[in-house]
Length: 223
Image 1 (spheres, one colour):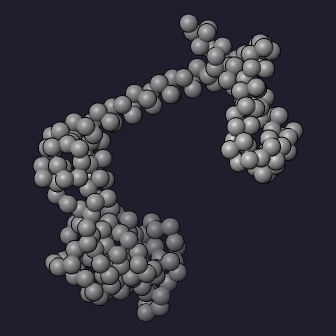
Image 2 (cartoon, helix red, strand yellow):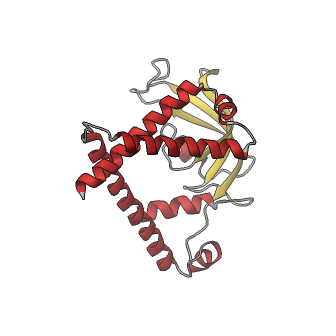
């Protein structure tokens, strides 16, 4: 996961290559026209299509055929659709893709110099440690959220204390009154501007109150 996240970050920092040829992992922008027996087939044509070489997005041979191409070059790729392809008209059929390479970008190499220039870390090792910490924190948060949602969905409130419901409804109303005040509007006009009626607003207020009170009751029960 650490390597995958770093790869994403490097891809996001990819820069256009003006010299040389396409390599595996490069992001290319291409125009292509697919023909069968000299006739273009549906879904086989696109302009300014962005593709990461090696992603396996296209049928076998398409991406490999772009490797080695130079900017502005046009090339015919003689390919065969797999027999199990979703389109019956193209399954197992021989086709030709005329591909024009508009441009291509390449991700930078992960080095201490790149890390120091593009992150708050000073070395590759520090950068990997930071990414790992970020992923671990995210995983812990997901675990907590999953645990809480599991308890929430499995719990039933047999009785809602009316005083708690009224307090939550007042909080909900006050929140929207503040929004309305910021827009120099009355609550009624603000609610109307949201495309709902005051009856809808009151219903939302009740739902908010029950949800909040339910959470509070569950926490008290656990405590």
